[in-house]
Length: 144
Image 1 (spheres, rainbow, N blue to C red):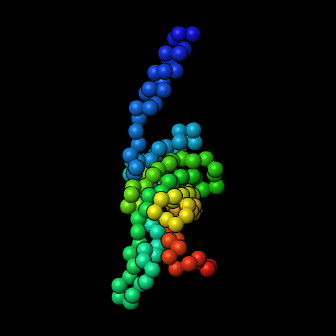
Image 2 (cartoon, rainbow, N blue to C red):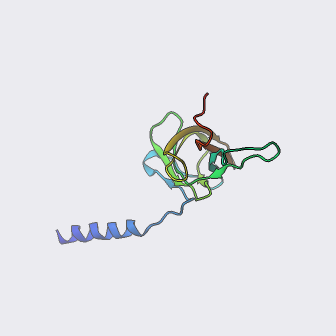
Image 3 (cartoon, rainbow, N blue to C red):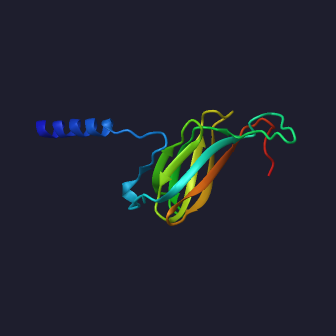
């Protein structure tokens, strides 16, 4: 019994010592997907428009926002990577070649929490660029 308690305590301590930086991915080892060192997704999460009035010749810049990001293989509900973007909205995740569904959720820097989904394809020997835009609400609801 004493050995089991010590094993649990040591496991908790070791797991608690690990850290993940805001731009680093956490792979889901249960899915069987392993990250490749030379392919994946580089992206940015932004809120737009960034100002209420946009003048011709002086576009309103997009504003980067932090977000929680989950990546799934297309057609699967299993999360293969989780990453938090940096304060400027930038993120990077190493992934093998394949088709992915990316879910981003923002709850800071926007008028109300929002979630959006994007699909993308990771090609061999390179990173796919992904821009995820959230509505700032400055000009009212978007009609599509």
